[in-house]
Length: 69
Image (cartoon, rainbow, N blue to C red; front, side, top):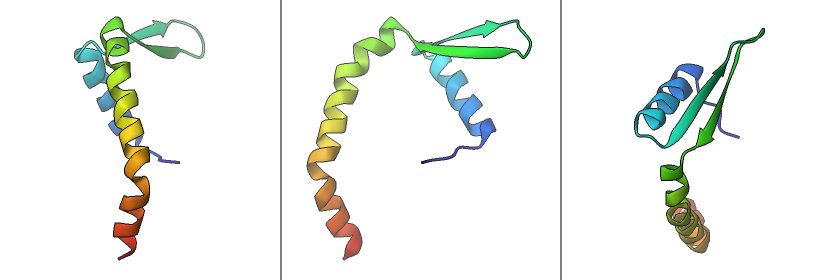
């Protein structure tokens, strides 16, 4: 599991929101909370992300072997 500092996470979320890739919805409740969801622009990228993931899985063993050398 990767643990990010909260400042880095917030910065990344703001950047993604600025690019129109995620939508931020703030709920004025106690305790206050925020939810993020994908925009249509982001959903259009999902096939690209899926193919990149498949490429990574395909060459994962090669990368592990290279790291051990």
